Length: 309
Image 1 (cartoon, helix red, strand yellow):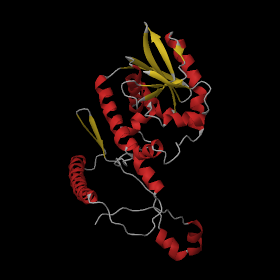
Image 2: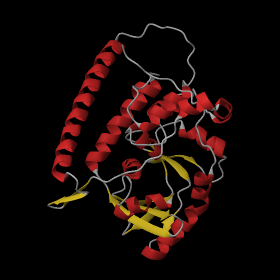
Image 3: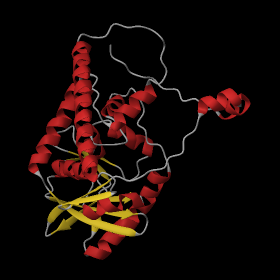
Image 4: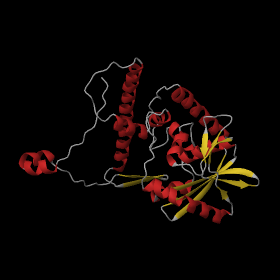
């Protein structure tokens, strides 16, 4: 690796500009399609300069930055290891498109280790109790690919009062997969300007729905590859319907075993069929009998519905 640029006194706007020079650790989970908040399409627009990087300041990002020194200090107190600041964007000499902006480094027995600090809501406590979330595993494996480090520490303050830290060992197989995915994205999509294929992640769905929320009412000729996609759409729709019917059949068989009983036990499995009371609302009746009230409180939701004929 080499130091691409020092960041000690760098303004945030300049730092965001340097991030466009390659693929950073936080981009790894986006390219892998496991990031719930950013899509590969959105990342492509940013890396090619078509949109500005979305670095919106909110409570999560703000307190994440504020509490990073706290996480470092607590990690050092619990482990006796010293975390050193790097204050530079590092670049892989073997794969120049891979960059790393580290939270810190630890020298353990003379060997460089990565340190990554995180904050998370209390809802993530169960995840951090089991280990490092996948998106952060990809992030630190990316950093290990850039730096050559054999090990990383990921520490997190969860819910403001639960502290976790885990060791992540270097995984050559996973690093190889990341390098191939990131290289393909950088060379084909960024450098050649080729729009990436939309994946099925929730982030991509939300991004496309938001970016193209308004229909212009026009009709266009689609590329021929869309014909294959239509065929795939039909096949998957049929398969989903078949799977649903199979699932319903299994559910009905379980119901036939339970009969009027609420709970059934078999081996280490428990099956329940409980009474549930739900409250409905007769909108049509309200509109017919008390239209004044209906018009005052009715709300409309606008969205685009995709159909394939």
